[in-house]
Image (cartoon, rainbow, N blue to C red):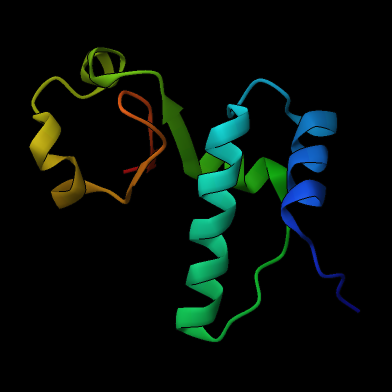
Length: 96
C-alpha cells in the first residue's frame, strides 16, 4: 500500500521529523528532483526522511561546501555529484 505525497506533505513530514536539514525552498527543489527521478526511472520512491537526509545535503554556499570538499571547484561539482540549485547561493548535492 502506498500513499501519494504532494509538496505540502513532503515539507510537513520533514518539518515534523528533521526540521533543520533543508530550507523551505530546498525541500521544494528536492521534491521536484525526486518526482522527476521517479518519472524518468518509472520507479516509485518511498518517503524515508532519514534516508533522504543521509543521501542529500543542502549547502548554504560554495564556501561551506569547500570546507568538506576542498579539491572540488564550484563548476566541477556536477562532475562528482548530483547538483540541485536552490537559489543564487544555496544548492543540494548527494553524498559522494
